[in-house]
Length: 539
Image (tube, rainbow, N blue to C red; front, side):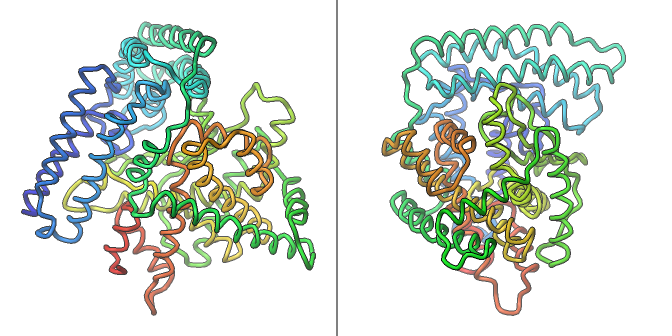
């Protein structure tokens, strides 16, 4: 039966990767590099049928006859397939969220990642550019109903960034290929994007009345598919609200230690944060300071023997325009199936050109030098970059973990490493202060995620929670309000993941060094924490 499962798993992973260019891109599979996602009715029907068949095939497997590793692969693949079915059949985001139809990441991947010679990548890029007009025509049909205004506004900005990407970056790749001419397909793609942006603008200025709030029924179901944990929504909210109070006590204590105040309160915290915020980068220096913070973090990890480092290439860069408007930073890793030696990208978003000076100042008060060091720990070392590089090295009997990964574990590890580094003294008390502020933010994110999507929390209530209890700057809080509306359940992965990964770290066996235990935690790909507990034998 194990052999039968291995064969089934291989076929299912292959079918998903060949039907979803986004999944293939993130996995490092280049077989569909000349394609864009097809959101036509017929294609969605075919995708749904394929996933149903896969779900039934996996349900027929007798888990008791599998090896422990294969049992985890089976559970992860079943969860992945059923989650995809839920998104297609219940959430149906392709029918109301124009961001789903953004071709930018798939174009950018061919431009930025030198996984193949320039001529080969240009051929694939030209094929994708040629598909953009039809893809956006299909998007208009799929988006026939109402769309939330915040999604439309963000899409208008991002699609403008895609047009700029084609206009500014495609010629540079074409110049590396003698005799290449992709002007016709580039111009047609830009024209289609311009037309689509105009169509979105009309939608925005017309009647965009659909709520961005998912609602309790769908949010609860999506939470289960996102987290892959037995924790209920009610328990999650209760734990988050209790941790909020605990973390406020901790940040008061650190602020008091920094300022020499015997009985610190919230004003003490604000004073300490104000002093830290005075040391900050700007749009011209933020990337360079992140590079310096990365070098310091690498040295610190080695000095304290916290986890085995890797030497995979990592590039720190400004976030591409087409990706801005949701998160301030991200790690774009090399896929597990990638065979070429290409870099991971740590992208940081500078402030948008249309922001007023006071909002720019607020942004960099939030992302000051000390917060930037903590952010670099989370996104790069020893956070996402290191963990995902270790995950790439996992090889199982099936390719399931190349497709399936747990956001709960990935984000949980990154947040756990923030605390780990601060505990060992990285950056001193000022970074510890920012790390606790980030823990407050993470905890509030989980509260916002549920209260906004399920309980009607207003913008004013959310802003009050972030500014007063989370000590956030106005610019960060305003951006998080938008992100809460643009996403659903993803903001809960940080808190739940941190809680569950920290519990695994605390279960380190007697006599095992911290480095050895951390290496063991990273040796199994990116499974949900409940599966990692099983694999490490701590259940």
